[in-house]
Length: 570
Ligand code: FES
Image (cartoon, rainbow, N blue to C red; front, side, top):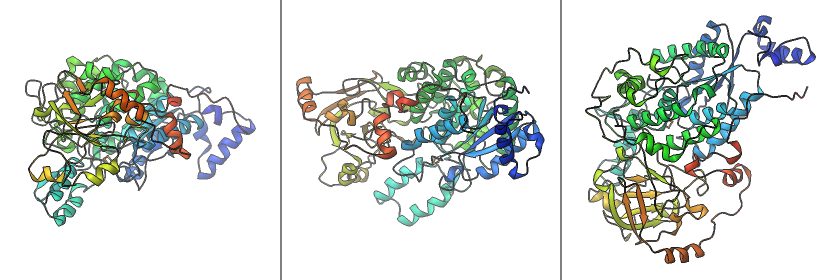
């Protein structure tokens, strides 16, 4: 190891500063030779008991540290803000960029030569990757792994996906409140993150598809011994990556992002991946646009028969072969020459990979959906784009013309959705405004608005829904999301009124508000921005968050700022 390593800028030599840097670290009993120039590996841990999906990380990190020590490195764990999805208010997405800032500054400010990112719950993965990308040290990610399958009354329950169904059934009076409550324990019965191909499993899979994890990262359950083994191997590999100077910028190339978009289509992955990959590409200064999602992913068949697009959960997906088996099925659509964190190309990683269950991971001639992927819609209602996930939508609604039922906010929606006098029927299109990045703020996962009770009682289970919000990766329905520009900046979605005719044509990539331009202009003149100035982090967020088609990162965080820190306060 060269004396010029990054950590040796702190720990090497005989200066007063070197004494300070070493001496305080030794208060934990570290021997002198830990500062001899061996690679220092920072372990960025998103453990929090308020993030139940990551609450097992105190155990997992010990396997990582053992791996770093095996390979002759020096592991040092540090905490960053833990962006848990299920608890944080008003929503974890509001804090993704804050967590990314925390990770970036913590990595840069500390004497590490490489970094291991411990992620699990939805936003913990993109926030760590975004922060690490802006520093660009040798970096590798390990996910915490999904929970074991939910089990209830002899069947399986998928995180999130079955909540939407159960909550609509309890509202419709189909199941009792007692059964609803009993399902809670059965759904979450081991450590780990959501069991469906929701955003957490999607982002774990995207990390694997981008090549920033070891193969197999996404699918091993949190409690599977192979997860602990992967953690140990990840620790070892991080040390080797420092020696090879294999940095994120060598892995996160445009080809890797296009590969990931295609894998996302084959997985039926979350629409949230669109935002996170766009933001990550921005950090890495890689050219990637919203349109790339449609161009690269649309023709790829969905093969993973996993909720919400299919019927199985991540546990079966693991036993069938996980992400490598999916990559192998679509290998002709991938650039196999990209380098990965394993030190091998994707093509080399896929040698010998098998699909062990062709009902869980379908073959190309028997897909779940012929053309999976994310469709990017455009039109006078969404000039900068909106997205829909056809694999989670109702085929009969993919081309639809209906009257708008407009809600101006989440509060307005909650107050009126079950009003018996609400003018709504099975042909209506629900429109939700002011839930975009700036509008809520933080772009909540409310785009899959629950249906009016009176339609649920008639057996209606899907309507076209349009918003500038996001949707949980575990959700389903004919749901148009991420409308850009959003309502809060005067995007056309704010001009929609009750009774307006909207045309959705997924095949034609079109979302049209059938109101003449003069009338829209008149409405535009009546509009004024909704926000009183905010202070604190929320104020910073509203001032600097970019629109959904740019990944909703902060404008001042785009780009890679490197790992150099010239100043030292001592
Ligand atoms: Fe954490 Fe779903 S709530 S992964």
